[in-house]
Amino acid sequence: MWKRTNWKGRRTTKPVPVELCDLCARVFPENESVSGYVPDSSAADPTHPWADGLRLITACCDDHFDVVKAGYAHRPFVEEELWAAKLTRTLTAGPPALSMEQLGCRTGLQEPQIRAAIAWHNERMREQQRTDP
Image (cartoon, rainbow, N blue to C red; front, side, top):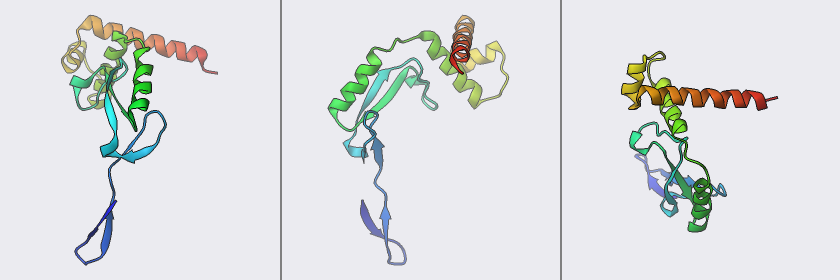
């Protein structure tokens, strides 16, 4: 942290941007982070659709980054999951009811992909309901 003087001549503290390690939860200065993208079909970026299917991971050191990255390497990439994430983003950020054509325009998906995403999502919800107490 560094100090600066405000307009009245008093010293104020300006916070230093920090990061949180995805493995150990250590908080550290942003400029010391090790970060990168890993494939993850559950990730739909809220503001950058080019990053859909990629998850940004952040670690406090190279070793922790490698551990987190290895964890994602064993996770299957399921296209229907990515499509469902895109649909969820669209439905939560825009009008509540859209036609199939509107969904296609806003997500970049074709109707068969939209239907597969909905079926995938619904099956996950049924599985969750069967396992919830």
